[in-house]
Image 1 (cartoon, rainbow, N blue to C red):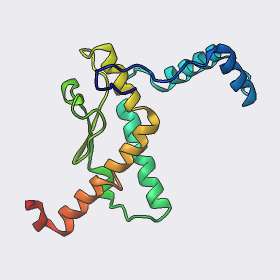
Image 2 (image 1 turned 90 degrees about the vertical axis):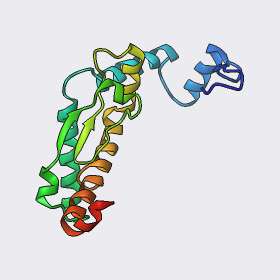
Image 3 (image 1 turned 60 degrees about the horizontal axis):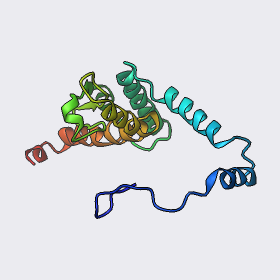
Image 4 (image 1 turned 180 degrees about the horizontal axis):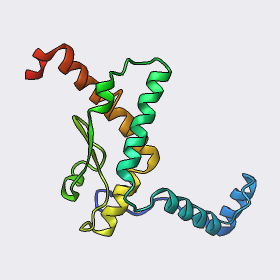
Length: 163
């Protein structure tokens, strides 16, 4: 839903009604009612987006998976130093408003809801940093992404550090 020129974010189109929705589900061989599907979706989403303190461990686990993948498939030569010489730091809530993902560089900054965030922002951060999105972001930022670029540049083209 995007706001229109008047600032309204109404859903466009005509509702088909419960009967039509049930007919569509039956035609697609889906044996659940709409309410049951919503309930299942809530359960799955709740299990995948727990508010816990394991986010830094998840990021490190994903980083190891990425390094193992490129090494096992012989895609990129990963220097041991590049694989080990980065850290993880939790990003402050205020900074997450501008960059709600996992910025990289010498350290990967983990975006995670903080206690002082309003509930809707906590939800936004959790939706944007679910396990599956996090995998792509961590792979992009770390071992075979920007982190490897920085490590290689510092080692082989140190004159470019000026830029």
